[in-house]
Length: 70
Image 1 (spheres, rainbow, N blue to C red):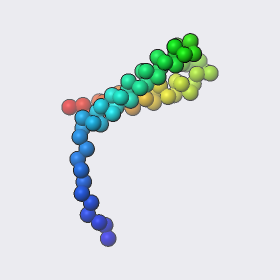
Image 2: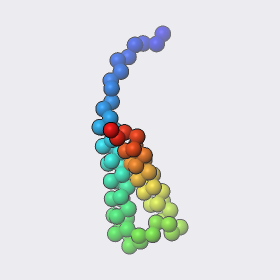
Image 3: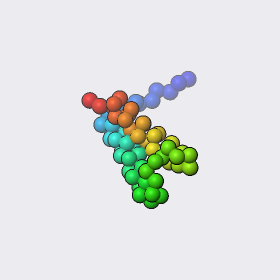
């Protein structure tokens, strides 16, 4: 009883630019965070949340860009 569903090819370029945007967002987040709070050392215990956000965004950005490059 599985219905036939049309499958649309997802362009690799869109995925690549999504991950590039993720990488840029991670770097931009780090720069804005550092400028706002005057702390460029995200390894300090009180900034562990900002460190986690930066690592996730940059990590997914790099890995995604490597997987979807041409």
